[in-house]
Image (cartoon, rainbow, N blue to C red):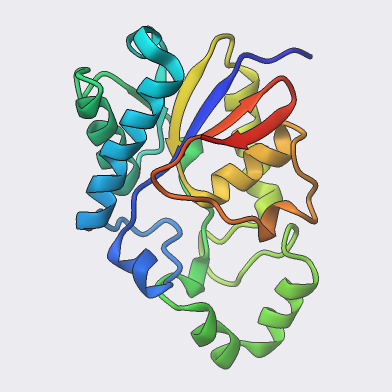
Amino acid sequence: MSRAPLYFVRHGETDWNAEGRLQGQRDTPLNRKGLAQAAEAGERLRGLLGEAVGTLPYLASPMERTRHTMEGLRRALGLDPAGYTIDPRLREIGFGAWEGLTWKDVRRSDPARSQARDRDRWGFCPPGEGAESYAMVAARVRPVLDALDRPTVIVAHGGVARAAMVALGTASTEEAPHLEILQGRILVFEAGTRRWA
């Protein structure tokens, strides 16, 4: 099936990103660097799309960090900051009881589950309410992607990007959980490929 190009933006940096903490579905604000990355993403989009930037649909996760990234990049493009749609299916993977911890904390406090995750990063679901595996995230994100019928800009999260890579056939379930998802850059999905811009 031929798909329209997708321009995926991971939210800008938060203090928890800088500290290596698992944010999951906790609402954390952008820090100063994250606000700058939002504007940078807008400039990159302008370079990719030119005048077409104002004609595309824009979708975002409902989390504060993604909404503020979306608003910052739209402001940088000279567009109405509020001119986008929120889709709750684009929220970040839930880390359950592990949210707020670093991976070092997790390995120290929950070594058995940490090792189980290392063996199956795609299928593993952390403990606690709201926790999800990447496979579960892919199941909720796939219908969003399948409904896109024209080029679209999405602002979401690292976990959602990994799920999208698998759903769009540009990464395997073994590869995707290990890939770095950059902030302030554009992940372009087009013609069955992915690239950073």
